[in-house]
Length: 305
Image 1: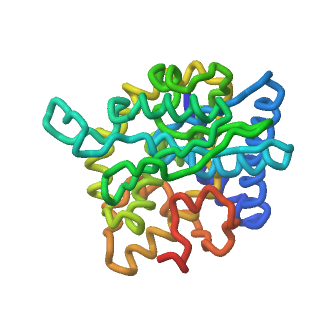
Image 2: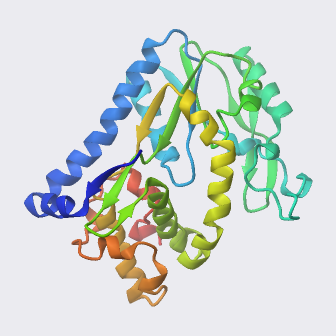
Image 3: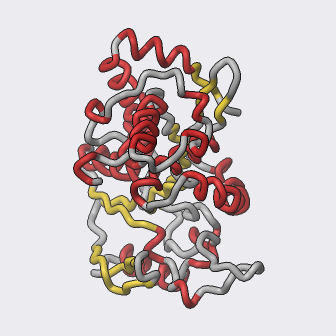
């Protein structure tokens, strides 16, 4: 069940002390990761941390920061993406409706995954594949890895909790994490579910990074969530730890982005979902966002535009 944060309360915190509001929000998120790191290190002989989450959950930043924390505690950490085991697009079996399969567990090369992890945990020098999304092809022997004493792998992706993946890892010494916004926002007229918060994140992200307008993002969203419900949700009850990636100040950041898009005549206000929820919020400049913030998964730094 969602816990909702009042938009009015957010505005009051921002008015009271904006810097403290941002600092406290970032500290809450990072505090979860320090607790998580301690739990991983307390559990006996963890070799793989399985980091799962749906679209726009914040998996990439969570994996990066968790790696840094574990390294501060003396561990050697490799971050490996599940996406690198995708089969070439032209070799995949199409979906029943004839469309290409971009999301199901069937697009993973389980034999290659099993071979790579077997060699890795066997102490051999091994080169993992890398998936080229522009060419829609796998590049074999692209990323060199070697297991070291005290190593931990963070294996990140939407299907890493799937039993077919677990059987391909060559070890049962894993720690399962589910990453997603677990809280969301409301005002006196509207509640934004955590699922729709992820949609809002995706709309903001895709305008700059994928040149996809919010209307199109909303059109394909039902297909995205259908895959999540079928292939991710069944395994979230079996995880060792949940990471809530909701950031209390994020609506204020997104308002700044929406206003920029409107000024540039790139989108209409009506095309931004749930705009009424944050229309009365004071926007926050991106200048105040910390360099390591999860917010940068969804908004673009000015120098990168």
